[in-house]
Amino acid sequence: MIRLSTLKDFVHHRLNEMPGPAPEPPVPPAAPARSEAQAPVSGAVKPGAEAAKAHAEGALKGALYYTQVEARASEEGWVESDETVKSKLRSKEEFPQG
Image (cartoon, rainbow, N blue to C red; front, side):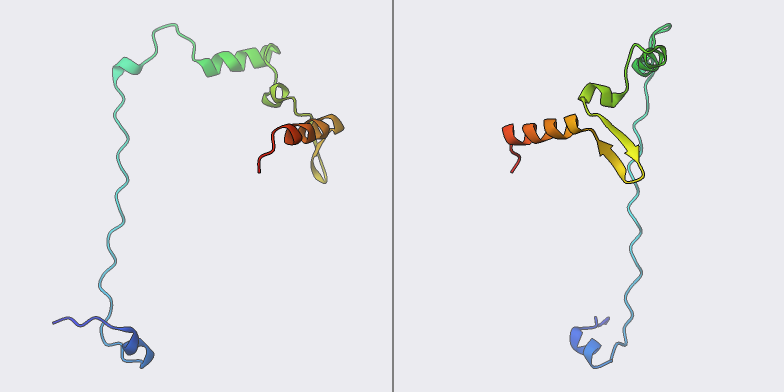
């Protein structure tokens, strides 16, 4: 008969039984197999490639351009322009979050 240790045994330094082996870690689920039906049609351009081409040509601006956030990196960290700070303050007044 295997007797499990209790807190009383621990307090009185009478730990005779060792814990059992650790369980095996769970196996992560396998990725679903890709079917041939998901392959793009011959000659089709991926959206990412299209966006990269537009960005390189100057037709597409950087991500922050469309959020109207004006900021720059400095030695103190990320510094926002006065217009951005005023806009955020107005937004927080109009749409309080808590």
